[in-house]
Length: 215
Image: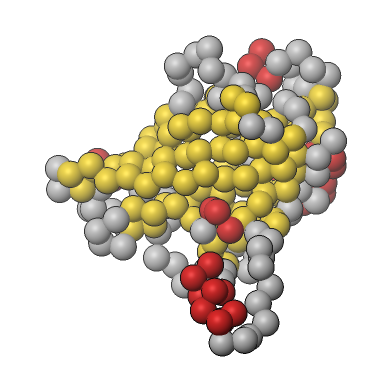
């Protein structure tokens, strides 16, 4: 696991204990909002027994639990629909681009998918698989999220009418970027799983990410 600063939140049980002894406690601490810079949204870690998923802010070298982070996609991410059929028929889409210079010029996130913390010789074939388990927008199933590289090479697609583009294998110790696309504004809940095989045993971890797309 890379050197890092871990984001900590005050648990409900600890807050209750502090309240009993009369210390002031601020309830419902807001999740950290990440809105720009290089952020590995999907980062897999292995502690020798279990897989886990984290969000790694490369700018501050801080690692967060996905539940402690909200990813912001501002209006500045809106762009003309590049015309790929899977992006729907709207004239505009919200894009977090795979090109870092372009992301920086718009002041939006440059999202990564990382297996850099996984070493070779642990997982079968030195590979793990990321799976898009589900996607919702404002509480309803959403077919409006996708991840693609280059000229429309889909990695993930939340379209509930198709069974493809839900899983993609990645080599360990690699770092990957692709464009994250959202077809409508709203609050998305994206559930991803990372899985692999160690010594013949299946290992996995699942987390849900919150993404707020602004109009």
